[in-house]
Each structure stands twice: as C-alpha cells, then as structure tokens.
Image (tube, rainbow over all chains, first blue to last red; front, side):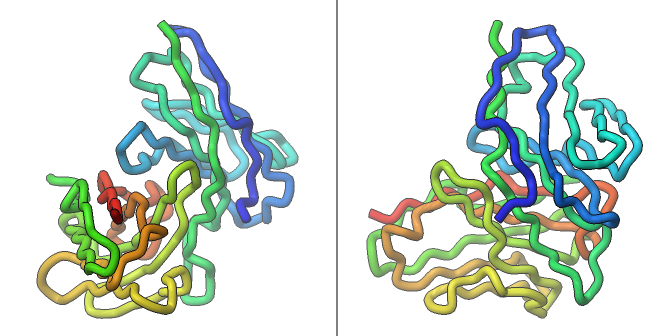
Amino acid sequence: DAKTTQPPSMDCAEGRAANLPCNHSTISGNEYVYWYRQIHSQGPQYIIHGLKNNETNEMASLIITEDRKSSTLILPHATLRDTAVYYCIVRPEWFDAGNNRKLIWGLGTSLAVNP
Amino acid sequence: NAGVMQNPRHLVRRRGQEARLRCSPMKGHSHVYWYRQLPEEGLKFMVYLQKENIIDESGMPKERFSAEFPKEGPSILRIQQVVRGDSAAYFCASSPRPMDGHYGYTFGSGTRLTVV
C-alpha cells in the first residue's frame, strides 16, 4: 500500500497557484518526499523532491512541514498544460542491495486547471 | 538526447497471443524498470534490470511474463498467452545508476496493450 494519502481531485483557475497536499504521517527519517505527475496518455514526469527543507525549482515549490508528516506541492502560476494526475511518493534517496527499489504509487490527485 | 523510447505505443492482441514490448533506455542509462498501470489505478512495479541481469522481479506475475535486457539492444517485456486482464499501460523507466536519487526515473511514454 502507498505510504501517502492525497485528495482524489482538485480544481484550479488558470494563472492562479495550485496547492496540492499530501499526508505521509509514517514517513521514516531517511525517506524523501518525491512528486511526479502524469499527463494523460504519457509516462510520469519527475517534478521535485525534498527531505525536510523547502525546495524550489523551475517547475514547482515543495513545502514540507517541520514534523515531516505532510507536504504541499505548489505550482505558482498554473497553466492548462499542468492538468494532470500528481503523485506524492516517499522513498529513500538511494537504494542499496538490501533496500526496496520499488516506488509505491497511490492514486494521486487529478488536477484540473480551468480557463 | 532522446528520452526513453518505448514501442509500440499501442498494441492489440487476441487472447492467447504473445505480446512483446520494447524499451530503449536513455543514452548512458544501464538500469531499466518496468511498471504496469491498470485502468484507474496507480503504477505497479514489475521488474528491475541491469544489462544482462534481472535484479528484482518481485512484481512480475510468476507465469507468462518475462523480461530481459541484453547486452545489445532494447529491454523486452514479453507476455505469453495474453488474457484480457493483461490489458494495461506498460511503462519503462531508466536511470544511470540504481534509482538515481537526484532526479528519479526518466519514464517512457508507455505501451498500451489491449487484449481482445
């Protein structure tokens, strides 16, 4: 089972910020929070990841609470092309021979950006 | 620099036929992962391969499914005697080393298998 819970769907107006929440209350100390998205009929695309500090890149910002039990992905100015399913995943950053290499995917949040 | 290439994009097979799905990883990537996505579900891990080696096949059904990643050529996911329940999107991902921590996987666009 996925170690994260996300709302099944969200709406956002074009040009506004989209804030996608994720709960991961059982996250371990060595696990990072990763976000991917899947645009319809395409393969998943990496967005961003973080451990405990907030992170920002050209696509999005990631805000992780101090207790690390939840996080929020922020798309600062959503466009129609951001309409996709967004997946929040927790995993160790590196795997060795003994670690579980599988990414456990939940159902994600289906974000609809409306004109 | 081409991304992960999967072909065919769409594949239709009759029940009992064989399906062969191909994945060419990104240049310089020697680690390949296959995932399956059933309709309205999240991705499920199937198998992780390095060149000429299967590292982890714990997500592969025990029968009818096999995977390979030869020294030369693409990785192949083979499904024998397909059944309707095999209808799904099959995604391949690659990384330059085991589960590249910084950027995660790079996924292909998938092969959509329909069994009729």
